[in-house]
Length: 152
Image (cartoon, rainbow, N blue to C red; front, top):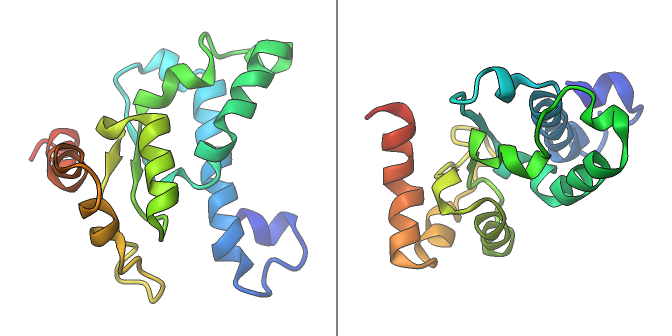
């Protein structure tokens, strides 16, 4: 994992999972966007686990630096916000509040249900968090988005 190699101490306090996975997902997604992958393959959709890691919560910063720094726009033809539809974000965020934020930021068409099962930290409340949302959005997240994305 990225955290173990770059941040001493990530092996303590389950930080490899609690912070390392989130950082790794964010970095991978940023490289896909800024590296021009979606410009070359505009129909490509990549699913991001753990609600997209830290990406959704720092996407505005990434977008802001894209506007200000030449090295951020070195390859990508569009701003990071413009690539959101190239991702599917799962619901493994463990609380309805970040789920609502995620849905508001990326839109309900880009969110699919997830639990992190079979791992011992699986999000047992995921179904309740999604079910508490508007019925139309819940149907997209629980069923129709996955059907469309995976051709089911």
